[in-house]
Length: 126
Image (cartoon, rainbow, N blue to C red; front, side, top):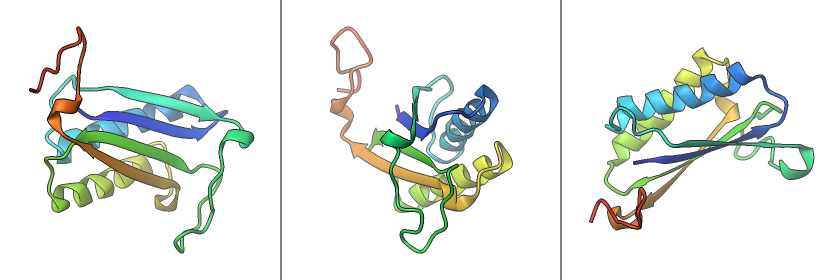
């Protein structure tokens, strides 16, 4: 059950944001064995005051279109699956909405299965 947080600069049209959400979700389905309907995605839009990043670290060329994607997921995936996920997200977001690879920043936060409660105060994976 990944929980995805997407942060980007304010002002993008709804279709742009939808393409990012869909691209990330489909990439997780393709590479992380995420089941259908396991879709929990939060989008955070920021003005210039709340959006600070280095445009060149580490040797990249980011633009104002940079998107930060943080995925919290169970710590059950291999390094190969993680690499495939990063590549697939970048490829999908290049296809739609047309993001450059340098503008796709991904952070994976891994947690143990007992750290989830989907509701009702129950740790469903325990």
